[in-house]
Length: 149
Image (cartoon, rainbow, N blue to C red; front, side, top):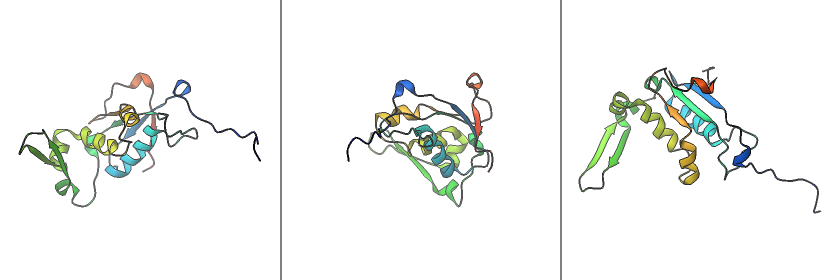
């Protein structure tokens, strides 16, 4: 039974239509929010999703400093970075990171959920995170999402 006339649709980057979404992180749980953002950035919420094509949309996250975490994560969750020199491991708790750079917390959570390849590098560039409720993307007319929680 060949030639039934059914063709598989493959999305192409030339005919992608990108939308802008605005997410208010106030009171949202970090991991659950990051998973939803990663899904939109990747394009998995669209019927035309193709794994090897960047078919996602832009996401602007505001109020990153008002994110919520459960349990003792503020004290127990650690962020590590290393310069490459012997004995130069830097460790920071989530609480310290939130005081210094709250937008980095959401950025790193989402980055851990996108593919670790060239496509992932392209996808993560569509994420814009801001600590308070001001952002420079008014001209793109971002559509608000995740308001029901």
